[in-house]
Image (cartoon, each protein chain N blue to C red):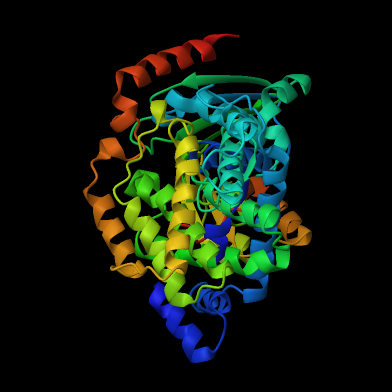
Length: 228
Length: 289
């Protein structure tokens, strides 16, 4: 912890875990898509599912997928704003298994494409992205993050890392499908990637899909302990 | 980080207590003291702005369990308290009811305990005409007191009960008030310790798990306790148990609190007949289109 963590942050109430964390999870989805989806389905686990209306978790998640900031007063009116922007949404209670009580599964649609993101709000506004399109991970959202679907062939990782012009903080690498020789590479970076670097990575022959998720920035990296 | 370490650093360096806290924070977190000062200054600015904006207003809260308390207290005016304490109570209720209606708050130290610090600082600004520049050292010190608690124990209701949230907020507020009233390091230590001791063992038992009952009114009662503690300390009353050790005690008490009394909505007030009836009514309210 630090003085800044204790003295703030500025946020929309009522709860850092059920409101602020939810907002940041939604915003990760917005950054991942690079836009507001045209349809969003939220599946809320345990505490999230049981108390979401009394904590404004639903409004916060929607505000997040529309890209709203932590202290945006419009979070309160997110349901109406989503309707007026043509964003179709639904909320469901669902048992998501052995995960943190404050976990949500988001299905975000952009035309025919959809992305499935699982995330937990672990207290004090801190979040963890725990699954992206079926692949487990553990992202804080605090770092700029590169998410790549690449060919599962020797040398692929080298080619990717060679093009990255920022310092790598964390690296996740998992095989998605052995038969199709596809792997998912997630790279958390200490600073933003240059546009040139990103374009070079996207044009690599081993890259099948590439997503660049900018940092949620106001999520403190060192914040610990769950605040109400 | 301990409060004793900050006090020692202040003596050794000759720095004022809040400046020593900034240096101690830099040593631990690596944060630039000037950036920290600027960030905390922005938090304090929002606290005063929101206090002014929400003061004494009725709010439409998420569950409807609260929302009219700030207005009632404001409209009735002072009964027994000083004007200062009255303003602190109203500001505290106002911020907490704004929080419960998805207003903008500063989570200092948490969203659930976000009313205590605005109570103290808004009253100092309104009733004692403290300019912003004079309030800031107190806010820095309040954050440092909270940081000591975070390091030695916890600020989380789910981990340590309400003593860790509103109890901590009261300790931060009492320490800041003592400091801004000219108290030295020992006076600040006693003020913070006196109020934390008085709220030791306080459980986190919100009705339905929502940040409204009893959280909103507890913030207002806690701000009066913080003012009382500061006043005692400034009159020379000392805490028999020093602040650092009081925080250790708070941690141990928190560890022995059962899960039902740590933000689960299962024990304490949340388990009463009335609470259960209210939760049923809230569910009906939510099902309305």
